[in-house]
Amino acid sequence: MKEKLQRIAQQFAIQGAISEIAPLGEGFINDTFIVRTGEGTPDYILQRKNKAIFPDVPAMMENIRKVTEHIRKRVAAAGGDPEREAMRIIPTAEGKYYHVDEDGEFWAVTVFISGTTAYDKADTPALARKGGEGIGRFQSQLSDFTEPLAETIKGFHNIRHRFVQWDASLKADAAGRCKDLAEEISWIESRREKMLDFWKKVEDGVIPTRVTHNDTKINNILFDERGEVLCAIDLDTVMNSTSLNDFGDAIRSYTNTGAEDDRDLSKVSMSFDMFRAYTEGYLSQRAGELTQVEIDHLAFSALYITYEQVLRFLMDYIDGDKYYKIKYPEHNLVRTHAQYALLQSMEKQYDAMCAAVAEIAAAAR
Ligand code: GN1
Ligand code: MG
Image (cartoon, rainbow, N blue to C red; front, top):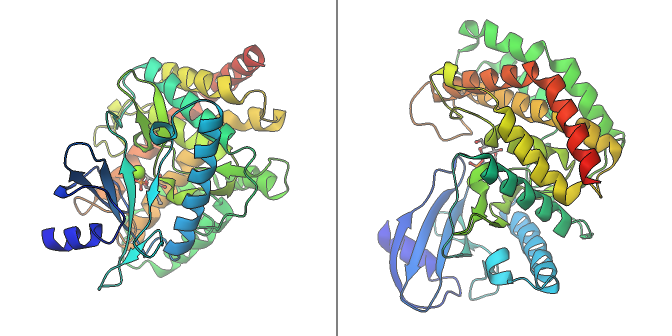
């Protein structure tokens, strides 16, 4: 494996001699490695892209190329340092942004930005505020991006599409697990119409479509030594959708007082302080550009994305664990329960969330 990884890394135009290649992080989808080189040359991130999940890796890499080039220009124009505040993707010797190995697997390389940290959890409201600023800035940097983007995963945050998959999963019952899941299935069904009502507004253009990251959980943001956000990473799912996805998914991850897969549900809830702090940071960057309809739906987007995540974890459990990496057989069921506890906590606090958003938006405008 070591030699193979070396060989793959060497297909890319990296500087310096490789001294080590080691696994990095806990992604659920791709396999990620850090490629270390000697003094004076950068280290790199090498990723095997999951082709079962991303059917068109070349189109995905083209999205990433366009978006990172745009952000680099915006950072430079604002007097920032594109090498630290934006990602740089590295081409192969033939100038492609991916390499296909002898097994037909797709690989890509980016520069590792040194002196940075990614968190699995927001420990303080100050960090959540910075995270909100970071995603707000990311969306603003892309507000004048007009090139077409490929849909890397069909219907990714489109709940109408998710219900098509969900209905098919229940019907197939591939792992024979549905018989023990009546309660969990009812959690999904009882909220179906409400979620479709929200998505209808996106379909009808009442809620605008923008350029969005679509996977804004906290560990997809790089912070520097001073706790400032440098940039958003993991751009595999950059697409055109509602920017509410990015707010909702961040709230899902930043505000959770427990873990995404906590077995102890008494630890799981939405921290209102974290919610407020993230919202303040986010709206400090975005209040001027968002429409009133978007602002009015920010709080709901947190429920929407968390609900969708309950559905996706449960659906994968029903399918027999085909999508997310699991560490033990009932992992996806544990994740389902933990995300549902988070959803319920958000539902209890929903009125207060709406009031806080309105107040923060009014102050920021
Ligand atoms: C996946 O790849 P990663 O771990 O950043 C998933 C997200 C989920 C998340 C759950 C492409 O993100 O949508 O919200 O797991 N990414 C994809 O933690 O499905
Ligand atoms: Mg990630």
